[in-house]
Amino acid sequence: MTGAASIGADAAWRPTERLRPDAAGIARAGALLRAGRLVALPTETVYGLGADGRDAAAVASLYAAKERPRFNPLIAHLPDAEAALREGAFGPDARRLAAAFWPGALTLVVPAAAGSRVCDLARAGLPSVALRVPSHPVARAILAAAGTPVVAPSANRSGRISPTRADHVLADLDGRIDAVVDGGPTAVGIESTIVACLDGRVRLLRPGGVARDAIEAALGRALDGTGPAEDPAAPLAPGLLASHYAPRAAVRLDAAAIRPGEAALLFGGPLPGVEAAALALDLSPTGDLAEAAQALFAHLHRLDASGAATIAVAPIPRRGLGEGIADRLERAAADRPS
Ligand code: TXA
Ligand code: MG
View (tube, rainbow, N blue to C red):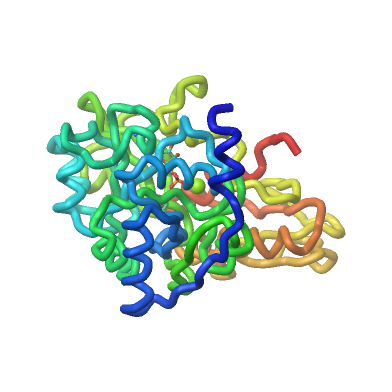
């Protein structure tokens, strides 16, 4: 394990400041980032844990705080498309997608520009770079104040449920990071869709906040490949480990009925047996997938906190944002070491 000794030092306890999303809080967040510190910030997808992407020491402390394996590269966030376009080599497809979806919940993986400021460690040594321009006004203001590409994975410890509120961030990382800017609950609720534009192919690496059909409409053709990483031994997105978003409870997918004592994650109304659930929460009683995505991680946090041994999950259609929701739930259900 590289840096086992430094993990302890880097992750040493420090008070975490809770900052307001006002001018003073944004200026403070920008100054902390420029000083090499770790700041969690709201984006429209989930809260990110930001560090200065140029600064290898800051990036190393980010990996340590999250307990994230260093082979898993980070997304660099920029305040506008112009700044993002300077960090990578964008062909016509990548340009079209950037124009259609930035600012927004799309991450583009492109060859890194020769002059890219995103350091090697943040890219896990890859020749490509993952870039995103978030639409959240507080995120964009912090990025502008920082004046540097800010690398930001979801602000949770590696393998845990992603945070959609500042309280989720603090529950996982209080004392391990310098500050969190509280921008309230996030609007999209699941992470960005990741699309790789490399070697003339356009591939979906991770379904997320922008639906596949919207991407294909903007592209004017179908995406290449059929889905995330074809070869699980050499995943295109090294972070797509099968077990991820893990609650403490076991997760039972496509439940037709709820068993007594289970926690229930519903969609579009009750299931048989729900009266005997430890706790039941509906992602969207009306069956709206955008509403379901927004509620997903907060509901998982609450159901897990109920102490039930199993979370039973209602069937969720895979159209539109349902593809990203189903992806997160399958990872939550995957076998994992205890
Ligand atoms: O919505 C989001 O994308 C959030 C917010 C904070 O922006 N961020 C996020 O980051 O979800 P993270 O670190 O949890 O997921 C980033 C994913 C990982 O699966 C990583 O492997 C992949 O992006 N990735 C990063 N750079 C890559 C590259 N050069 N090639 C392929 N995959 C890459
Ligand atoms: Mg994550």
